[in-house]
Image 1 (tube, one colour):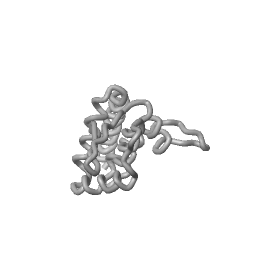
Image 2 (image 1 turned 180 degrees about the vertical axis):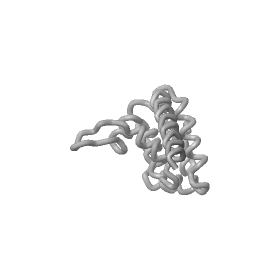
Image 3 (image 1 turned 60 degrees about the vertical axis):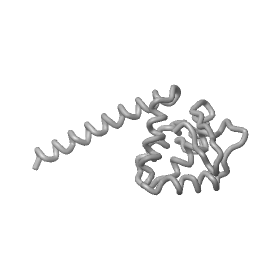
Length: 134
């Protein structure tokens, strides 16, 4: 998703350094009060949780972080509710497509896809092992 139109105003979404900073601060991993990053990774993983609309909110807030005039929190929430009647599938796919094709986020997305493939292979191997033990 490259832009959102909220209350008749179009806001471009920018996937640059401020995008990463926002996600690291608001959705990243912390240990003993120290931010460890991984905000994009955590946000993308939440996109796959059915009904979890917080990820959409974080992506819009992060994507509009560099704008002088930003949509209000209430307006973002209302927009999300209006655009997730299908459970958020179309919105999720739109964000994932953009994140996979954006210059700065594509490497993270490639890494996440590789992790997902490994996890699926491990799960399949465990299922085969369980069946052979029976």
